[in-house]
Structures are given as C-alpha cells and as structure tokens.
Amino acid sequence: MKYLDFSINGRVQNLMVDVFDAISTSKESEIKVSELLDTRSIFELVFEIVRETGFYNQDENFHIIKALNIDTQEENREEALYNTWISMGSNLNTAKTQEEFNAKFALFVPIILKRMEAINRIAV
Image (cartoon, one colour):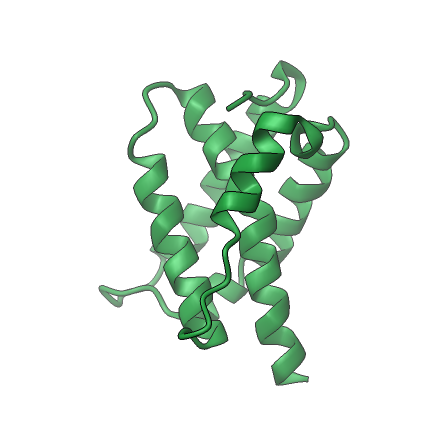
C-alpha cells in the first residue's frame, strides 16, 4: 500500500477526524446507517482531495480497492454500508503509524461513497 502525498496527509487526517467526531455524537452504542450517511459530504471532500493526487490510480492501491470493493449478494444496501464501515474500522486498528492510518482510511473512501450512493438511489 502506498501512502498519501505529504501535501494532503494532514488535510485527510483532519477530515477523517471530522467523520469520527460526527459519528461519536450519537448516544447509541451502535452506529446507525443514517449517521453514516450524514458524513457523505466529508467523504466526498476527502475523495476529491485524494483523487487529484493520483493515489487511487497507483497500481498497488487500485488493486487493494478492487479487492475491498467486493459486492455481496446477500446484503441489502444498508448492511453493505454498515459492514464496509466495520471492515474499515478493523483495518484502521491494524495501522502502525498515523500515515498508514490515513492511507487506509483513504482506500475505503470510494467504497463507502459507492455504498452511500446505492442507498441514495433507492431513497429518491
């Protein structure tokens, strides 16, 4: 896995903190899909910042995203988003440095956005 460009690493980290802050305001013990959907604008901003650097097009990162982006037929759209979020959390917990943490978060951004878009298409 390639890491984020130094020039955007801090911005991605701050936006990631914004995502986790937005979700941590819940008094529930389990995150709701609606809470995840409320963070969409932050994920979109992260995606635009990271995409401009070519991070998603680097062969190694592209293959990782493809592997993580496996659709499961058994899940409904909300479960797919929730399970992707849980998988992201598990992966983030294995990071040994802040740079690795930020890069792993960035790898999940397009997948989370894809799951959010699938839910929004149904809701419209």
